[in-house]
Length: 85
Image (cartoon, rainbow, N blue to C red; front, side, top):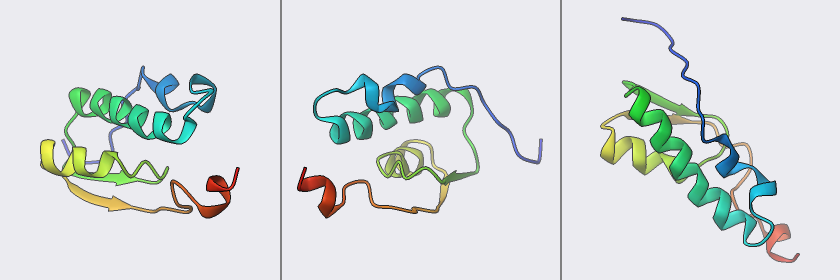
């Protein structure tokens, strides 16, 4: 059917910062793959739009899902100020 479809993602905890007390950025990035796989297994969209900045999900949906990709990244996954901490 045409239109927007939303799916419930049960693996949200994998991208929560509290799940990764150490190596938070890499943990969240890898966790986004788990979350993306959860979404892809439930529904393969024609177009995948990422507005959360989960850059690791883009090749997942493009290469494995065969989806066209659209994204709005409002901040980098890793910025220089994060590296200084």
